[in-house]
Image 1 (spheres, one colour):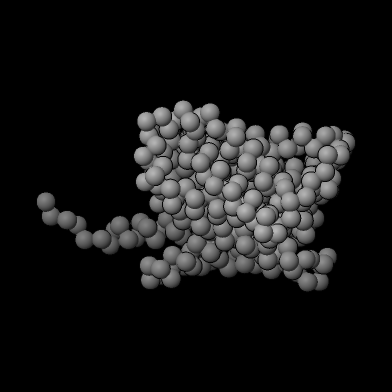
Image 2 (image 1 turned 180 degrees about the vertical axis):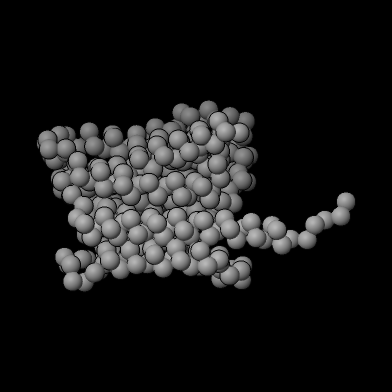
Length: 313
């Protein structure tokens, strides 16, 4: 049991690191003339192609499962690939990578209020304290007296947070018997179709260039960051699903918050975006608030189990 938990934790930590590095890599492509839609399309479609052999092998004799769970596959691809990544990539066109990541990390707070509204169960005082601390961090980050921020970027980052809320809620209830590689591969294919349709409808621009792009202080062909982006995406989602199946959504969602310091480190190395003191302080408040929210959620669950009437055999 301990080995399973350790495997899950390490898998999610590696997944968080790969997700965090993807943002700065994508931003180097923006600086080279690529649009967010084009980067997202190559990332999702390329990942689906990379996973195609594993998907086909895993589904041998199990194609009936695809027909049975096609709705879940399409929804997961549209929201968790096209939506969550698309809004985030659009946000970092207007904001720093770290700030966009921090705003997206408010998703667990949204989950708390959604569950309160849906279940009519009041969260614990510890949960409310965590919400207050996290909101304080957001207010510090969005201080109007500081450097000017883009309203469009903030709204796009919050849209990515909403997609993350859906990701956590769906993952917590996900019980499909499909293997991880097959589920991710099919969902990525569905997400790629959504991005292509959005580009055809001119909802998002699909612009790219064949010229070199600035990457880690060098001018390299665009294929280099694109390949890294595809490989990191495949590995991040596969590791994420393995980790969630090992330790569950509660601890898993908390582990994913390590993306914030990873994103700051990656942005510093690749983009020279050194985090200022206000960003560091606000980020620490948000992470501390999220930790309190998760602790309060655990306390509430234990109280409900204690208050539940014992069944007589």
